[in-house]
Length: 187
Image 1 (cartoon, rainbow, N blue to C red):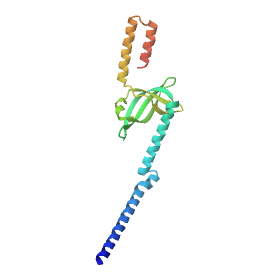
Image 2: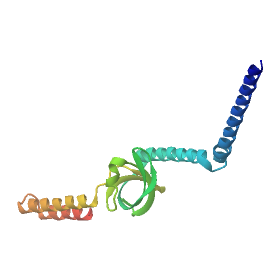
Image 3: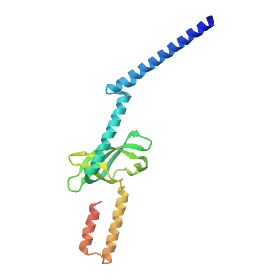
Image 4: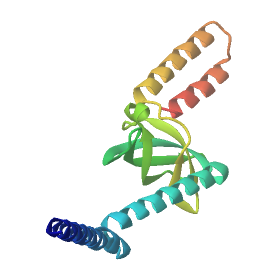
């Protein structure tokens, strides 16, 4: 009988220790994660903020794709923010936005960029964007960047082709000058 009593007491002590450990873990998690998350800090708060920011950014981009003004932008600066997922990296971009019928302006924005497109985001590269004239800091990227060197080479080839067309008499001098100026304006 004594052995059975000792076994029962040992089992109860084990259960009490298990409950104490669970209560301790609960309070640790509550004090270190949940409660700070409710007080504008901590892991939960950061995750909730990140989710809300991503959701708001997606809604803004969707709206800009539908209603934004078209413009060309040149990448002036690129910085890795240090935030990345398995397939995307967040970059901070300083863009010079050049609307067709308005003054150019600069905007700093953060965008999640596919790992496979990272090498395209270099200073000097050009891309198409949409922006909100009422809130020009809101930018949606419409195209992948075209590196500056590739665009200049393309312009050089276009000028050579234009000279060839003029030399063969296939275009007039007026057409040549007009098209040449268009190519030079896009440099």
